[in-house]
Length: 293
Image (cartoon, rainbow, N blue to C red; front, side, top):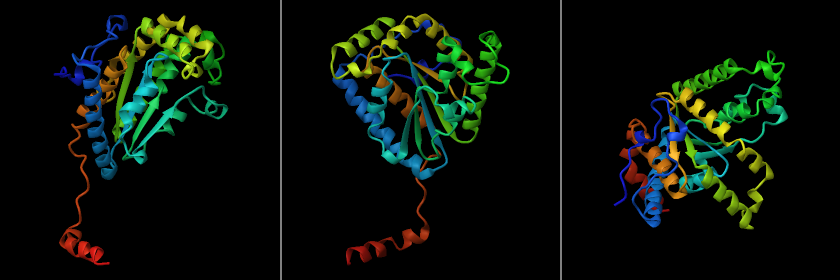
């Protein structure tokens, strides 16, 4: 029997040291068993999403962060494939466009938020603004912030302020009915190496590779340090981080799906609307009318 998991064992409730968090996790099950349980779990999620759509008072925002090759794209495909297409919208955030740079850094994320009744999935998220920009602070200069004139102006206080702004952004969303999940897909440097090699060795995957991937890989420790700071600073009661061991993709997909299912079931007020008494009273009449056409 597959190991029973508890969502809170992956939730960040206190400061963590990322090097001490394992990138692997055993479910004590064969691959086919894990895939079967994932199928059952995503079916349950899809059913809940239908109720969410009908209820229309909450939205769900799923944020996926992780190093390159951590499995974000395939996780989205496998976890959400059973959803009604009208009920889930995926956004993948790349380098900001000229238009996006003419707004504050949260603007492009704000306009991509899911409306009530829907799931939104951010493939890379607003946290890129305290991750990739922190490793490459020269990108901040492109935002044309009035009081930032040089790299010397981008100090620790700047990053602390920006993370407070992100927490306030999320607090506002939660207060207005958005249920937020933040998942860090945690892989080892060795596993990333293996996945990059597979990209290069399999013709159908080579298009995903860029020489820049290797340059970013050289900055592994810097990225890990930035993730640790961001997670510790912004894992809150209403918008917590979950660190998902992701060296095995099937396990990571199941863990994310299971956490979503477990936590969403706590929203017992999400129910399909009740049918009007007048409709119920004449239900058989409507059935007969249609049947006798």
